[in-house]
Length: 354
Image 1 (cartoon, one colour):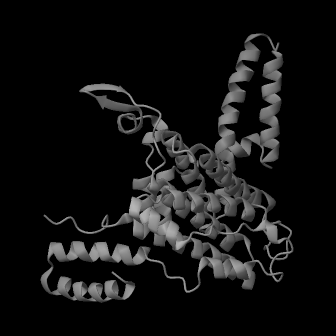
Image 2 (cartoon, rainbow, N blue to C red):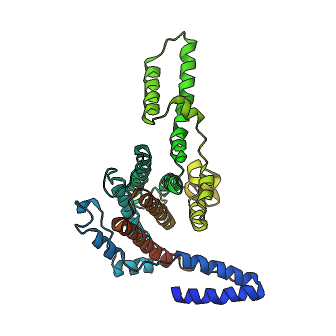
Image 3 (cartoon, helix red, strand yellow):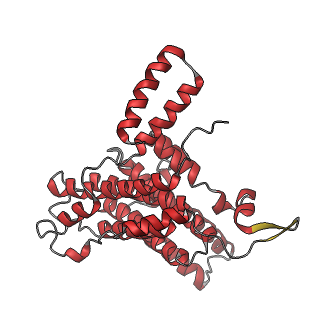
């Protein structure tokens, strides 16, 4: 269905729901509303907006901005015929990883960047760089159609970093950054306390490795601009679920919470039967090394990182034509990936009627 057809059907169903309160009508309305929200809405293509970005007007070094993959209609048709969109989605996933590291390298003192506390900026570009590095690691792992179980673990790590970027910048609460920094340092303080206790039990005699560890902990604390006491007194960082709830985006929650579960990180039974075990003539045996990275991993992780990039640009850049163009570029990439997603999903989001 086209956007216009879906909008027309939604209008019809909305009237029916008001008249009948039927559960089937309500279910179809919910499905179509979700599909409409996911449909591309950009007026310019990816090629057009990135061509505009490549002009001398915006960047001195044009090579700093990666160019989007060129997917031909023949390649797209081949994916459709094979019901396998991984080759195309792989290219877009790789591109999003490159885009993340490109934006992470924006100079804090640039005229286009607003005044931001250095430590805030360092946290954000550090998280964005982490997303990029891990995505490019997944590119190296998945390019031959194996290590799908490993890329799922890494995608979960990318997901957490992307959520933290969005959570950190979705309000003007500066305390969030201090809580983020202190969260990692509190573990270091606990380790320091343990080492100090062991050294005290030896009447102050310390091992060389203990001295080295204490010096490393001290350097980490000093890099934060906080004292050990300030770290200890800082309010605890909320868990990931609380961060996601604070974002208040139901579509984001759906994609992130249900599509990138923590099974793969923790090695739950679900993870074992999906990736590590198989039934061989009625016997459960170790699965061969043949797990591919799933289409949905490429799609969801790309969306999450693009959302993190968008949040980063909105937070750090001065509101001007350059910021607007960069945001258009991000949204054009989202739309292109969503176009492929809609094609590859087939009838996944249709009601399953008997």
